[in-house]
Every structure is written in structure tokens, then in C-alpha cells.
Image (cartoon, rainbow, N blue to C red; front, side, top):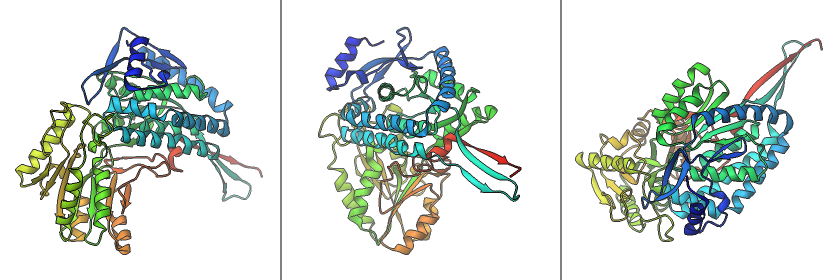
Length: 500
């Protein structure tokens, strides 16, 4: 277990002003449980250096935390109004804004993304507390006309109960706030297992929740190592007290969790894998398309669920797009995320690097050509890979059917709208899709035919709290953010009143 001296040293080394944000225990019923007998190491993926030891929460502690959450929920749902929940969420938003730079540094150090990306994430993450602070007092029911003149049907939305939240490493703050904001706004209690690779960002949010006045037991955090992660996921799914699971991660794990939840018939919302197409038609503004493709595909070195995975460029503008896009990529700089000149950091671990390598070699073996990059950047560290652009990628390449989740940009030439729609929709996944065109008729036509839960037309940016975030098919179900975000954390109760 990291000592206070080690925590202070960590804060000093990285310029973190609010040392209280650096927590290394589990948060259970308002208390920080620090267990030096079982810990795991958090590592900087850029340098490979050990950062801090964090408590590997014991199963018995997690089970107690779930029980405490139920007690807190039963008290909270009857004593805090929507307006009171709103004030707490607004305070959480204000605290995130006040501590934004420290939170961004923590994110960069444990995740690897550039500091600019981390600052963007903290702004995005905090916006969900602001958004749901405004939604909390507005969870409405209905008065439904009955077929009988002597009856009235009244509905209300009530909090579902204790929710289990399982989050990934790529957005260690935003993937928590997007779920937590909606859960608290609805009146639920939450038990959370953050990603093993990035627990420090989650634990910092736990400290801020306490500072905001969130009642004990409503926000419980259980950091665990990779081996215990599997056990905790199964425990959440099979535990009768937990009434809902919200998970962001791979489709394979989502299928596993869904099966484990079957016996307790939980409400589920899953944001799973993607295979996003990015289409550029001949009539598009090419310079604009290049700018948005760069951000959409290579943000966080391609490690985002909604990043473009397949870039389809119509033959009339293919060469122009490829030339401009490649020139822009070559201006970027790989490095440690805290270096002010760094635009792109490392991948999260060796498995991610190996997957990028395999996709590149597969495409090259089938006729693709390297326009830039193509290999590891081992002089920077073992988790670095060059930003890579491939031309003339054939339809048979693996990258067309598997999400790379890394800095590989495959350029695929197409002729007609009908052809590209068939290619784009040739996947079981349906999270996000993008296309660029000035033809307003095509905007509606293609937008309606793309098999995706979210579509960007003439934009590569889909990140804001007001957007109903979620996919279809193997990309999951449920929506996060937006006016619909609370619905997944509520149940509808109907009361039929007779004798009127």
C-alpha cells in the first residue's frame, strides 16, 4: 500500500496541487478502506514506471459495500427530493471544474493520453454532472386517460435501486460520470468497479463526491486487480441486491455479463464495441473532412469506442484526401502525455500494440501500401506505435471486420453510394458512423440507411452530454446522456384509481 509520503511524492512529481484527490483505498459507505495486505500496482503506460499501489478490494468488503448501498438507497429515496439531488450534482460539477487540471494530470499519467486530450475528457466528464443536475428535478410521470370514465391511470418513474457500474480504462473519468450522473439524478445508489489500469481517476471522483455532500453509501468504489475483475463482474451480475448493470467495454465481455445476469433478470445497459465507418463522398469539403477524420480516428491514439475504424473515400477525391491526411498525420508528435509538444501518447498495454501490428501486417499481405508509419516506436517505450496510414486496403483485410482500437488508418476506395452503404453496413456492430457530403438529399438518405446508433454528418465529433449515446446490434443497447439517460435507471409504476 502506498504511504502518505509516497502519495505526496507522487503529487509533487507531477504537479498535482490538491493531494486529497490521490486516494488508494476502496470507498465503502463513506469510509476509505486501505488494506496493505492486498494491493496492485498502477503503472504509467508511457514510461512503464510504477506509480502507486492501490488496494485490491476483498470480496467480503465488496459484499458489505453492496449491502451498505441498499441501506443508503432506501434512506436516500425517501429523504432527498429531485431538487436536493440536483444541488449535490451541481456541486460535484463545480468541484470537477475547480480541480480540472489536477484531474487531467492524473488521467494522463495513468492512461497515457496527451494532456490536451485529458483536459478535454475532464470537461466532457464534468458536463454530465451539470446536465443531470438539471434533469434531476424533472423526472416526470403521466396522467393517462382510461377507457373507463370512472378510472384514472397515473404513472410515476421511480429509481430502480442499487446499480452496478463497470467502466473501462480509456475514459476513466467520463465513463463514470456519464453513468453516475444519471443514476444519482434518478435517486439510485451505485457500486462501481473501475478499470484496473486506471483506478486513480475514479478514486479522485470518490473524494470529490464526499466533498459535494453526497450521503454515505450512495457512491461505493471497489478497485481490484485484473484477476479479481472477473470475480467482481460475476458477483455484480448475480447479486440480488443489484437491480441494474451498466457496462462499457468489449462485446465479448458484454455477452458474458448478459448471461451472468439472466438468473436475476437485471435491467442492463451496455455500450460495447464498434466498427465505425467514415465515408467521404466526392462532393464533400475535403479539407473539412480531413480535419474531422484526424480527430475522429486518432484521438487518444485511436483508443476510443466511437473512433473511425474504416475510412471509405470515393474514388474522385481519394488521392487528394490520402495526400492531405497523410501530410497532417506526419506533423503529429508521439511522446509522454505530459510533454507539452506531445499530440499522441502510447497504447494502454502490449496486447493493444500487438493487435495494431497484426492488423497492419494482414492488410499489407493482402496488397495495402504504407503511406506513413507502420511500425512500433520502441525508442519511446514498449507501448508506443507509430501513427499509421495504409492505402489501397482491400475488403478482405481483417481491419474491415475487427475493431483495431489503435493508431491505424485504413483508406478504402469506393465508387458508388450503393457500394459504400453495403460495405459500411457489412458488420454486426452499430455504434457510430460518419459521412461527409454537401448534397442535402444524400444527408437524409445515407443518414437513414447507415446501421448505427449515432451518426455524424459533416462532423467527426459526437461527444456532448445532450446526445443520446449508445449503439445497436453488437454495440449494445440503452442510451447514456441526454433527456433519455435517466430512463435506464428508473422503473415505471402505474396506479389505476377507480370509483371516480
